[in-house]
Length: 170
View 1 (cartoon, helix red, strand yellow):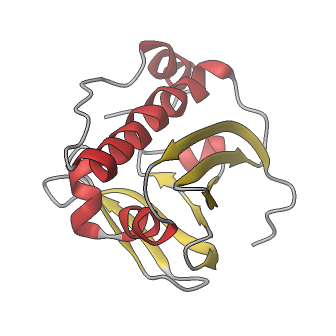
View 2 (cartoon, helix red, strand yellow):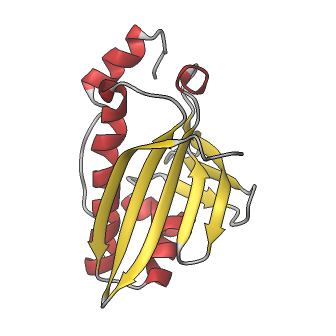
View 3 (cartoon, helix red, strand yellow):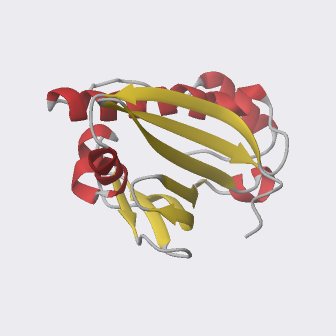
């Protein structure tokens, strides 16, 4: 997959009092991800072309994709496709990159969500609400042993924008 034409549309950076190894494990471990990803579990085959799946608490596939870049403890790029009917067809593939950089006694974690076409801010509002909550919960879990519990639903403006495009949502 040629990722050169993907443009960053959401960038979120957070500092975590942890090590690159522990942050990497948090991002790639099924059991650990369930704790901070609101019951969702990441399953990943850590090699180029490997599968990337996020399952809901009941085991259903919520997100699917594949590994595009994998630099142990440093960088992970995956396709990140929410399994809603017509979403990928109309909005294209989403690319998510995690960059992990040691910074003194902390780690700088930058998550970038990129797309191969322009998308309306209303459509992007879902990820722009969700990513900070997910990564803040990851930070809390790594630093305190307890995830941050954030209760939220998909933003109404995102759902309205998807409906306007004729995309059915659950």
